[in-house]
Image (cartoon, rainbow, N blue to C red; front, side, top):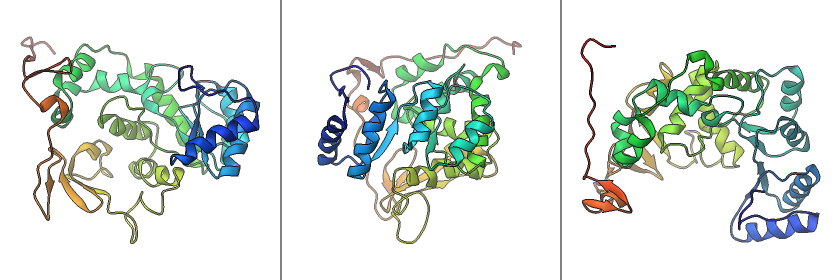
Length: 306
C-alpha cells in the first residue's frame, strides 16, 4: 500500500495470508488495502480475507477504473468518493448488484473543490464554542480565520453528493466517514453534505448510524436504539429531522449507559464526575509547543460594510 515503514509487499496469496494472520492475531477484524497497484494483488488480499473471515476496506485513491474493479471483485466497501460525477446506469447498476458499501468522504471529495473548504468558507468555525472547549484556539484560528471563498456552484462535493444519492437509491448502503479533518465537527459537515446532494435528513442520519454499524459488522450491538444493543445515544436540543444543521446541537452523550454533558464531557445523571484535564489544559503557558492562555484573538469589523 502506502510507502513507509508500515508498508507490506503482497505478491502472492501466501504473502497476503501471512500479513492478515498477523493482524488478526492482535485483534483486527478488517484490513486496509491501500492502493495496491495491481488487481491481482488486491484479489490476493481479498482471498486471504475470505479464508480468515475478515473485511477488506480499500483506499479509493481517486482512480475510477480501479474503483470499479474493486466493486466487481467484492471488497467490503469503497472508501473515498469515485472521482467522476455524475454517474450513469452502468456504474449504478454494477454497484447496486453487489453488497459493496460506499463511504464517500465528501469532506475531501475527489474531482474538484472538496467539502471541507465549503464550511470554512460559509461558517465561522472559530466561533464554535463546543469545538473550542476541546481544541486549542490557536489550532482552530490558524485553520479557519484566513479563509478563501468560491461560488456555490464551484464546490464539486455537491455534485459528488448527488451521485452518492443516485447510488444509494438503488440499494447500496452508504456510510458516513469524515476523514479526521476537524475534531468532531467534520462528521456533522459530512452529514449536512449528504442532504446537500438530495438525501433526506433521515437518510443522512441512517448513513451516519445504522449503515456504518452494518458496514463494520457491529449492527447487532450499535447503530440504532433497540433492546439488547449497547446504551450509546445522544440527546438533542433540537430535531435534525426538521433541520439537519441541528445535528451539532447535542445536549448529552450516553456511552455504555453513562451520561455526559456534551459541552464539558463531565459525567452527569446518576453520578457527577468531572473529566480529567485535556493535555492543553494542564497548565498555563506553552504545552507541547501550543500556546494556551497566552494569546488572545480579536475580531475587527468595519461599520456599514457587509
